[in-house]
Length: 573
Image (tube, rainbow, N blue to C red; front, side, top):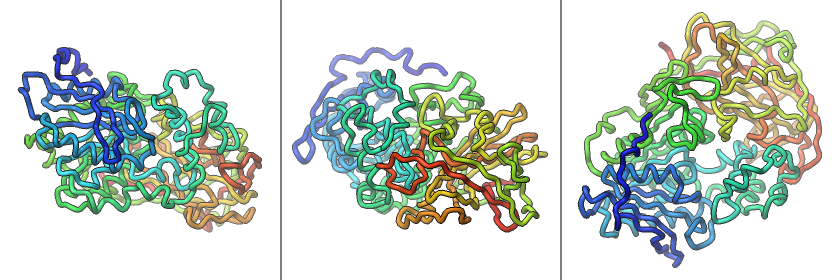
């Protein structure tokens, strides 16, 4: 794709104001850089786009976006959040963004260069700095556009009670007021993630961040999580939102919660009916917004998505904000609310709701001769005739299944990776369909229901959906994990009785993929996905302070008595 900034002129004198103090209600001043449009757009006032970030308001990609927004007639404010960069105060992650965001909206709206119309932008944490203060409804804020954001962190940092390890490394990055990018490039991350106990692991590098300590201590969805969650704030929302994510984004599941909450529960008709969701074949790191881009033909890990995957992130914003802030009819209000990319078919399509109303929920049953770790088992629509068969494997926390593909939040290992080598492990059970005699589209939430036992009082079970191509590549699509003690939810943790059979339900998040003719649908079952998720030590002890390890002997039951199965949202053609 051509660089839209290639021919932009330098910023004119007087059009860039650096380190401008923005006062908060408690007297703390937050630092902002103000970029005004070039003189060809007159002396203002103009609509304004705001980025509030914990990373760096001089981050190169956002400077690039800012230059383009300026040359589209928008003033842009790039602000360091409280306690970050050049801003004063102490950073209280997520919580402080409610009032600081609102106070910033109010300050901008009263400036002579603002025409009273404000929108916001930004990825990941800067996505949340948009959505949370929107609930306070500054009269100047007309719309937001969070990329890869979340409803709250319980679904991201503590996935159904399991610790998402990427929060650990993310907060290593943020132990100071500035990012630690360069130093951590030289740090042995692999060894770090094996450190036990988790509670003191970070101390080997620096002082443990209070937020990370909180993630470890609060395994239930209690007030520590809920006091900044959006789950009870949708009814306060008065403006529409454009949510942007990717099938391989570590926050994709949160974006479906955001879209459904905003479009169904918001206070105003505008907010409900004009809210949009865009989902591409992207990850948190590799996307139109990422530091690393796909190749010119949409090359990404072990699959090519084609030029259609190379969407223009700047155009997404101007298409949205020209309508919302400039009252230019861009046609976006006439588009259906969801725009999704069907992988495999490699084309975009509009939809009206999530899940899709026309979904044919289809059970694919697990079966084997009891040797699925040596010979691949079967995945078929018909229930097995045998009453009870089981496959077994050993889970050793000292040798966990390595994270590879799907929504793992790292550049090297995220996305549509080939997992065929993973299938060779003795602790991974593989079940696959026969070669498909016709294509099958799967679009929607994915779930596995399995019947299992363990000789330990606590353990984990994981599930991964892959698309096995004709060449044998097992392309990762999506995955999930359940911690046995939380099988009834984190409000009611209960240990296992060893060797008793239990039903476990694994939420595998969402995907959209066309399984082509002669491909196979494949389900993996195991007990670890590391370092994406923390290892279960199988002892039933305290998760954050435990260091003793026990090997678990696992059994997966199937047959007519125990209908272990994969539930797929098949879309009729």
